[in-house]
Image (cartoon, rainbow over all chains, first blue to last red; front, top):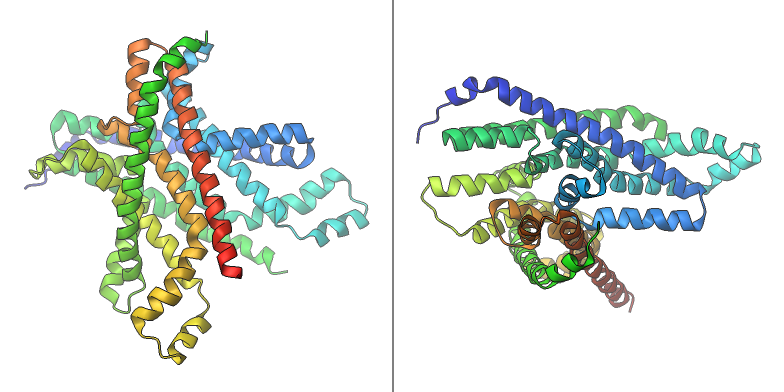
Length: 220
Length: 219
């Protein structure tokens, strides 16, 4: 078997664009997911039982169903209730919603692992509720959860491959398209694997660096 | 807007498809677990070569999306002359991917056993096999049961990707029905309900199992 990589140089533009779409949907989806997850976690801390129960149901439903089904519901089912999105928008939003449930759980765990004494000390110092959240809870929680956060961000980077099923022109979609047109599957798949591996390794290295940087705040 | 009648008509077909989703996941878990034990043993080996091979296995299969792995097997097997049915190919792909995750979970379990236990076993004159079977394995399983259950739940969910290579499981069947009835909202909603029920049941069973193990541990 002979490998012919000219098929890749010929389609370099399309592949680069696909990689760009992968990274774009990933970053945008992650941002939505983290923002939404944080909101859910904070609201759970400070709202009544009914609201909390509703949010728990949201988290359980999102975590209990496959990402692919959620995407199908949003992209194919959305138009019948008036939500018509183009593939990239649907994919990014889907990624954000999917991730938000997991991030909410990570944040919740982080809030819970803050020692009670810190909160009691804050109350003794006469801090208000919101001061306690943003001066005591948030900073400590953010440090504790870094490893879990990085892990989830990596998981999301791999989930972007699923977006190809709803015709988002990202790396997997573009490359398998070239593959079916040229039958050069081995070359295509090698590049595909290398692309994702590079993305994952890079992210986990950045994550380790961040972990080291914020780790010093934990020593006190 | 939301037609209940389409929902009800699709129920029997979807229920049948749910069974095949469960069986694909169970098969993948079984083979993935077996391979995962081997990979885990290699990672904890004394010799460098198996260690490195196992590390490459884990890095690769955890670093590449399962969808890409599925497509790889789907496109590459015919080109090297192997003609497997899409079901077999899918189960192989999911099992191999699963083995990487299982190996890491088990490794965590084995490393979590206090070293004093091994020293005690050696003091009592237990052989290597005895130590593994009677001391290490039961404790490692107890330490990792909850992770293994959540891995099983993840497996049910990722088995939906198998639909992409044409295996007729829950997601694929839902796609087919949605295409023929033009009612994607209802059908995918129902498919989601099925996945949710399966996973809820699994989580519940896992909780029961964990409680029993804890009880057995205490008595």
